[in-house]
Length: 66
View 1 (spheres, rainbow, N blue to C red):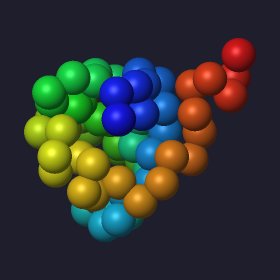
View 2 (cartoon, helix red, strand yellow; view 1 turned 120 degrees about the vertical axis):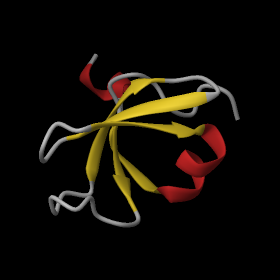
View 3 (spheres, rainbow, N blue to C red; view 1 turned 135 degrees about the vertical axis):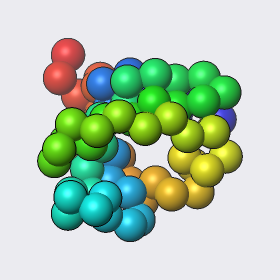
């Protein structure tokens, strides 16, 4: 489904980051996703398939703030 995730969305991942946070902000969308940990600020690149398997839910949709 194209357009399911957008830049600025906050997602909850199934497993927490080593810093303890499970919330991430999407900063790049495409074949690869770049997500930024909201706990420590670390940025990670993931292929689309891995990202979609690891996402639990979208917490804050970018369109909600408009």
